[in-house]
Length: 327
Image (cartoon, rainbow, N blue to C red; front, side, top):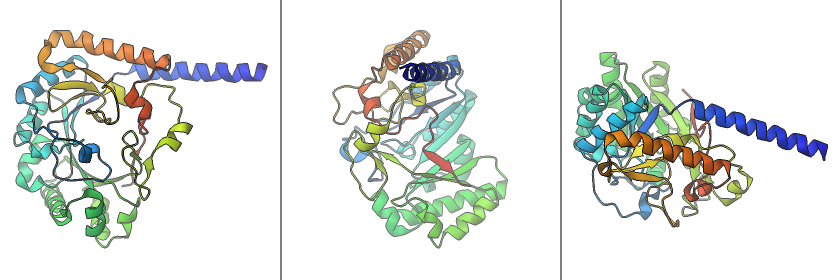
């Protein structure tokens, strides 16, 4: 019994130390999801189960969100592609420049299909980092994973970005993030030689996303690494997830905790991560509202009363370690 007691006490102390570390430092990054419309049909994404509204977050809503972010000492704003691609917003570059005007780092995450609708100069002046999600370096694998026949378009767009970066010696970062049926299979592709050359020149960085959420048991793809119930049974969520400190402005003006979990719950009864709509409250009141939401959330986690979305999510991690950089 003494041994069991010591183990329990040690686990409790580790847990308390984890809370101290997580609570000490505020999040340096917040997200903006500008639209719920996408031009791809990725087999691992909840977009395939949704009915998009077509709404795009307004310039005024973005500016208000940035003013709130300044209060919390946020350093970086991500324009995210979760269940909608940011490049479908015709005013995206203006919003990217607005982010930089407020002295935040401006990051773009996209499937890259519409990059050719904007000049490289405009893209590089609007964003500090451009992240392109790709389904491998072979047309067949890409089409099977992303549901559209746009591989040539995306790769040509990537080549133009790399060419412009090399020509201008720009400090803007270019990242390729592979989401594949078979991890690292892109290294076997014929085009990898060209990609490897870019890596060696320091023109791009490459990462691979190795596991995917089952979106609350909605997605079941045995040929991909979809984390599901068996994984959840072995997973113990002792500390609040890092993503709970990443507040997100959604396409409809809602502000949520975590933009990773779908904002339109699938097989769930409610959206426990919703804070409110940005239009409903003045800037001065948002500090108290977001702080209260964070405190309540942490308190519930300490009591093991985890929100339904978080309980079902398999991408949980206090240290967020699902993406691996390999170059």
